[in-house]
Length: 577
Image 1 (cartoon, rainbow, N blue to C red):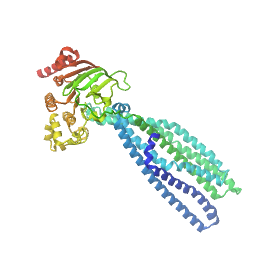
Image 2: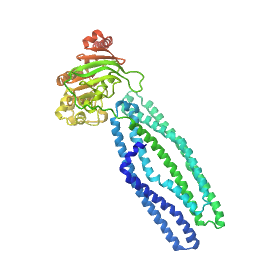
Image 3: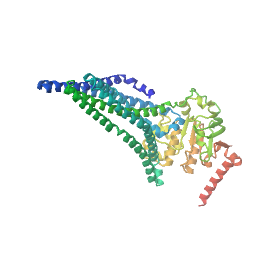
Image 4: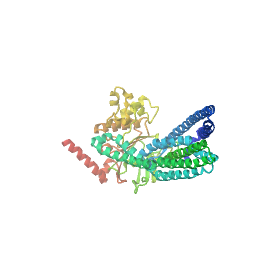
């Protein structure tokens, strides 16, 4: 929580003035019972109408002033809390975007979304309530007790019996409910994860008619939230009835003993009324304090979850900003092994190869053999556990991330498009790309035909996630986006899987003709897509079991030969059918 206090540095004035005006409101509230006592003793007791009217006017003035002070405090509290929340969210979002893939994997996307939205709101509410009530509630308890002592010391002993009893009730409830709030946040994380998966995979869910199963799973998740919240609510519900019971018993004791002291002339009726009012104020303040503790408990739990994100170190950035492009080997792996954080085994083992400028590197292998992991080491999304990965002869760990990735065009395995026009999506890699550059990239990616045939052309609006495009169209737009600006390296992570053989062939021919100096890293399940590659790496269970050209691997690599033969048999079978 301490590391979040820095976001209050611009609101020092509000942090001081807000509680100050709330303190003034509490002072005026403590004066009211004294005025009422005088009305009863001096006004009503002496049948002095003018005195009653005058003192009643004073009560109205005290109430109006208290309202003004409360509204002023509310203004400062809102300004401070919402300003704090805005700065916290902005910085948290900025920090999340600076994290490495490994850090994001550690917490999970859904949990990060929940911490960025729900947890920041909870902390913001905690700041708001702190300014509004943290000073008022304790001051009322202490002030009312002091005022009661000044009226009658012996009768005030009732306060010192009632207050600890109510405090014990509050302590018991807090002890039971505090651990349950963190569990509620974890349940919210799970519900957020299911919501995200269901919305993103809506088509798949319907294709397999899994709506009912997904609804049941989500219902189970929200039932967990409900059950936990109800359990907390049941325990918290004890607070008000027990507190009011203790208070009412205290008031009975005050009236009983106070009545006896009135009989012996040690106490007036007005003072007894004031005493009763102070008892009520103490109880209400303690209840407010209990609710405030609940809010603070939630805020601290959420603050700790946010601090866990801030505790993750940003992605390490190299220091080299200039790269010598004359180096013969554009990409070089030297005895590279890699293991994901928390994984029990290596995902890649002892990989070594090099690729020269303008060459095409193919990567093929079974599912889960480490193809995408290998490719993700080139732009330094993950850092090699052992060995070195070099680009232009420089270790990727030493190159500034922006400098490194500005030279690499990446097409992920899952085509990810963003809401906006095609032109806006195409300018992600190069923000000032001209229409001519965009059209050239679209032509290379075999996407210009369907883009030019659409009524709006480059201004065609893409819906969220590219839902208004087919799988092949999304892949071609994603490929074209990576080609804008003629990158030195293009990584195609199985990004032609949705293309038919004819379009795939046309794209590969256009790529070699239009970008002859670009080094291409192509991951594919099709041997036909990699036939013309200058070098092919055959992956099997994290190891490179074969490196060479298509012809060389046919002769020397059993795994590649098996993949090739199986695909050729499938094509022959399809042709015969």
